[in-house]
Length: 94
Image 1 (cartoon, rainbow, N blue to C red):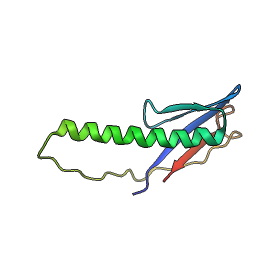
Image 2 (image 1 turned 60 degrees about the vertical axis):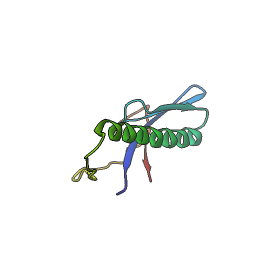
Image 3 (image 1 turned 135 degrees about the horizontal axis):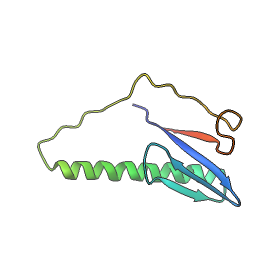
Image 4 (image 1 turned 180 degrees about the horizontal axis):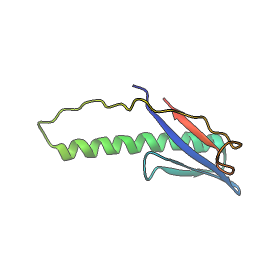
């Protein structure tokens, strides 16, 4: 299953700042766009793994894991010209 998350990114002075819409607390800042995207991906992976570990710890024993997917959504590639005049959007895939 491929996971897709939306990174909202913005250039603010000499910094690039960004966050992942779907996962609270995943936010970063870097001096270049490329570094920001790399750091967001690393931070997102770490947050998802931590959340997974915490869920398994809370379940303790006698549990099962089932993969869940969301179907029927529409993914749009928004550019600066469309909706968000100041905030270009990127999507991280892996």
